[in-house]
Amino acid sequence: MARLPIRRYEGEARVIVSSLELERALADIRQERVVGFDTETRPAFRRGESYLPSLAQVATARAVHLFPLQRMDFSAALAELLAAPGIVKAGVGIAEDLRQLKKLFPFQEVSAIDLGVLAKQRGIEQTGLRNLAGIVLGIRIPKGKRTSNWAAQKLTLQQIGYAAMDAWAARELYLKLET
Image (cartoon, rainbow, N blue to C red; front, side, top):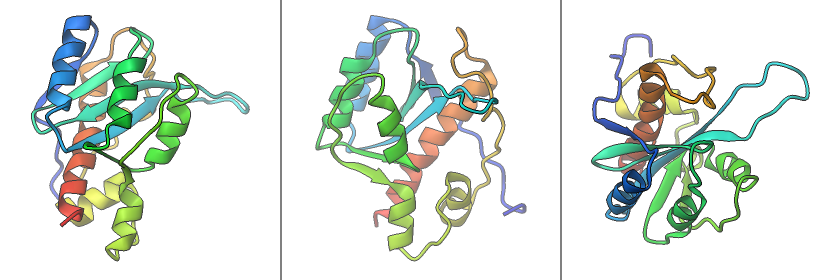
């Protein structure tokens, strides 16, 4: 794994902070049959401390849309996506992401695929995003900003890149593993 080339997401990453940006993101997402899906949560460092998701990421063929959940009410838009039967939502550990999101707003998910489960069905024992990226895509994903404050008012360029990469990699992994 250490010899694999490091890959960073090089496409467009859009942080959605207005109604107009949300409509554009939804128009893009609605064109897809597969999206990469992930969430980020502010880390907890004390026993008994926990936080709800701060960011949802959705990767399409054209962009990664980042939804800072404290900045706007994205519940209707995300509920629509998660309930759309014609759009596969692919992610690693997606069941836990969805369970946590349901603490923020109600929705019924359809067509959510856990890449770890799909990988095991294909005979791959490793199920984490970074390991799967190495095995299936032949790339190394840097760990970077995993423990940063995802609830910050303004995300850094490093946070945006990290979050976009995770969603993009999830989509790419599904496209490789589904064949």
